[in-house]
Image 1 (cartoon, rainbow, N blue to C red):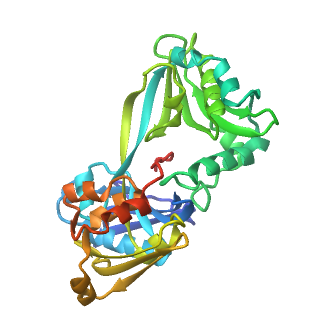
Image 2: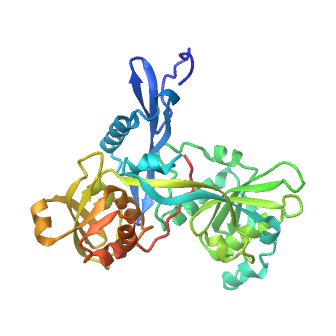
Image 3: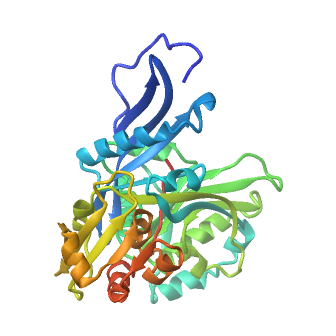
Amino acid sequence: MPRQAPTDHPDTLPPGMRPFGYFDGDTLVAKMVDRDFDSHFGGDIVPTCGIAGVTTVAERRGAGLLTPLFRETLRAARERGAAISTLFPSAPRIYRGFGYELVGDYVSVDLPTAALAEVPAEVPRALSRGGSLSVRRAVAADYDDVRRIYTEWASAQNGPLTRTGPSFTATADDFIADFTGVTLALDEEGKATGYASWNRGPGYDETSRIGVADLIATSPAATATLLGVLGSFSSVAPTTRIDTSGDDLARLVLPTQDWRVVDASPYMLRLLDLPLAFGSRRFSSAISAGLRFRVAGDFLDDLNGGWLLEVSGGAARCTPSSDADHDKRGAPVFDTRGLGPMYAGVQSAANLRMAGLLSGDAGDDATWDALFGGRQFHIRDYF
């Protein structure tokens, strides 16, 4: 919202971004952006609306402008095929009224670089069952390997963005140019099994540090090997800062308890389209279930009411169900905010009940937990 109208107007919008604004006459007084993403859930890909750039002019805050703006933005996102929506809140309280709830945190942690240097050299060899690992600096030609490693890791989690599609347009050269270095860990056959993308900060004194944007590995040996490379900077950069989330596997090979969170950005999620959200992801093929439930309190209205979730053979089908059938059979009632933490697998049915986000019949609670549990929640991109 510039003080004066801009003199130059872009001919096209950035790819993967759909801005929405609330106008008072000709004056823009509130805005937000729908980012076109996909997220990994249950081993499959779920179309995602990432909300970003939420701003209201200071003089109009508290006037309720975000309610119609969110309604229009989320409905448009659903029309383009988004099943869920996520965001990084400035204040979670603001977004709970729109159905979002906390599911994780994007964090930066500081570790003494010397602690990484203490990762024993024999650890990678022992964990690779006698094989030897090597490392080398990545070049643009290795970009496909980097993306393969990230996808292999991300598809085993709930939550990470796919880093594909219209919102991710970086080329291999762009990626390499963004960092001081990208280090690959290679197994005994020369296959890349992990990478670390890092930037060397300025100076050599106690304030100097190594910043790690990604530390992603698909084997414990690769994790330990990459930590050892970062540890080699201990004489010139006493601190290493790693961007991560959740219970990072790197902690399982660290020799010390050092893991100091220096910055945390909460992450919130809500469901937009129940049939698409449940139908897009996979479930354990060992579980077959028919779960009736209700949704209450959603400001979009059309999610409220009775639903039937049927799961069989690893696939799910979610359809509207009549209130009369629910009254006869009994069914749990999810506050719209409770659906996000259950879907992400970060809160059990019992915890949602204690938080006031789930009520009613508890007979299917164990089945809900079994369906949505079992994967760690992680995010690696801030938007």
